[in-house]
Image 1 (spheres, rainbow, N blue to C red):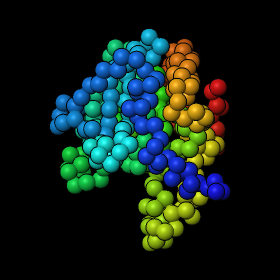
Image 2: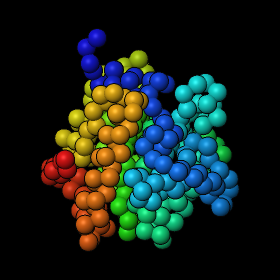
Image 3: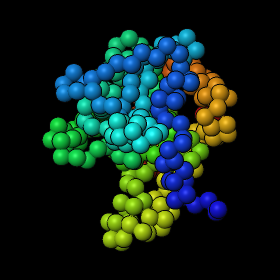
Image 4: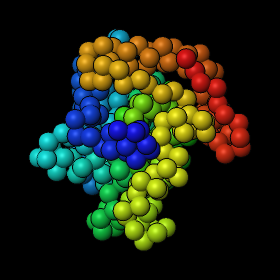
Length: 265
């Protein structure tokens, strides 16, 4: 099969791909999950808490889709409600208070767009995350492990480093949604995907992502060990930056200007 942007989308959506909880379980030690946004409830689509990365305390936040039909239903198919984003922000501010780096794993087709979510301030919750993440005084690394859909993904991706797995995608809208809007025909999703520049290579070329992570040995111990080593090394580098907020500001200000951020290896 010829590899196309839309074939990448299908791979990113594969239920057999490792989910956020798989990364938490295999990359970190001693994970202690924390619940609730202290306003409404606990969103099962976002999992977060404290863990150890090679003996370094970190805050880990992941959008979780689940593997089976039952798990996916329980996790709302990885579509967070506003209380999920507020929970994530609460954990990030807690991490800042105690000097813990923040690591996010992103895999969502987008934030949940149901009436209840809108009534509880979905747009405001996402907007607050964008604002607050931009000024966090601790290192933030976000990794797109599957789908990175619209503001639902961006709400956890205002980071010092954004990485993507080889077959992850990152886009303002799904190919089906784009085709429905532009051509009134969702069957043109493949054509839309080719125009959206949503692959990992596209994102790195545009400066949106700094690193593409090979999917060699995906889901195996060697793969998770590699992720752990990459994260540890990058946190060492970020720990030497005396102006994290300023560097993060410049990172995002450079997007769209033609200045491609140099890949950190």
